[in-house]
Amino acid sequence: MVELRRDVDFEGPIVTGFTPNGYKIGDQRFDSGLLLSPEQALSWDMPGRNNLNLTDIIAALDLSPAPEFLLFGSGSKMEQPTASFRRAAEAAKLGIEVMDSRAAARAWGVLRAEERWIIGAFMPLR
Image (cartoon, rainbow, N blue to C red; front, side, top):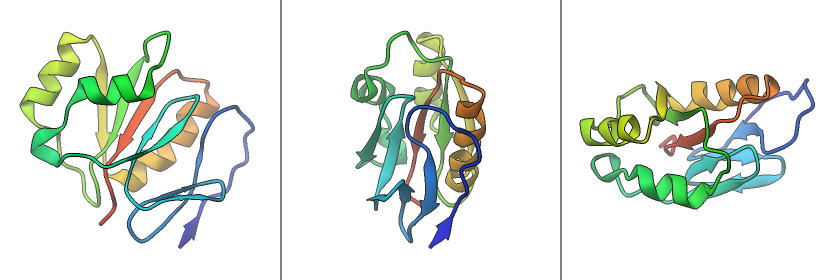
């Protein structure tokens, strides 16, 4: 397991490490995908890359005010979400930043240290 250092204090969940299939938030393990907001971390049993549903992600995180953008971790390698998912984000006026899930987990900490009001959807690492 890889551990990440937390040098900056801020409120909300921060990815502190990786498990073989997922993530650690503090002492809690998520051996699945992960949904994050500045207020919470949720296990995400995502429906498969072709069935991603932005409405379900936003509803699960229930964030107010609306987030600036979605940080999307696409698993072990960087892959764009489907065109329909990107169109849904565009219609919701929500930008998407895509990277592999390990990079997204590290970027989450940097962006939250800057107090960015964002959400994250990280696919499992397996």
